[in-house]
Image (cartoon, rainbow, N blue to C red; front, side, top):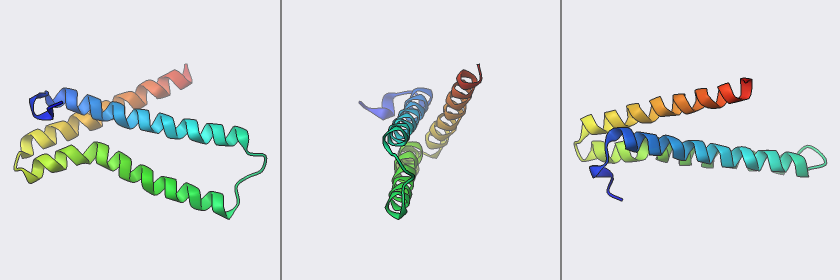
Length: 104
């Protein structure tokens, strides 16, 4: 898949969907752990959550900022900013849809 030939709108949408899928998988992990644990996690559980937080920041940061950063290094700043803007826009739209689905 050649990202240079895709429109910035499509790249931003795909990056946002990737972040949404990752967040859904992490939420599913938390939900399944909550159902399988009899008592609250102790110190090792808290440390695991902090490691998961660091890993999640790295994954989401790579999905959102990785390709735009690559483009900026290659001096394609306008395309990079367009992709970043569309990624953030689609992320807000996905969040809004999820929140509406929860409320309704």
